[in-house]
Length: 175
Image 1 (tube, rainbow, N blue to C red):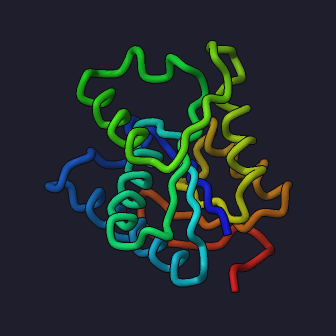
Image 2: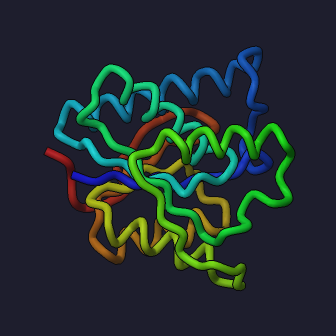
């Protein structure tokens, strides 16, 4: 089974990416628990959009698990070639490391367009059986992707960034 990740960028999260931030560490622990739970249920293939924030954290967790469990795979779905051109050097290096260690990568569009992120998100959802989202109702790309996944009858697992509570938003359940 294939799992795709969608979630907020760092500026939409209620915490800072820091081991000193209790909400952040609580969220990352819960995220890893969800991934491990999915692997225990037969999910081995994962897709990340390699954006900053949730996509990056999930991809890094998958790569860490992949070291011990080679049946786990990671695909990077890149919305357009220049996705990281305006990122800090540190964030670019982090992204490059993920893409380099992934099993595969696909570039959805060579050039930026107003809808390239939505096209990337639909690609991930269409390919996935399960969508894991860092989401608590804020409007934007994550909401669009969650709504699209639900319309496509995908299993949607939500991790609330504020409380780290996990819930299944879809009518379908993972066995």
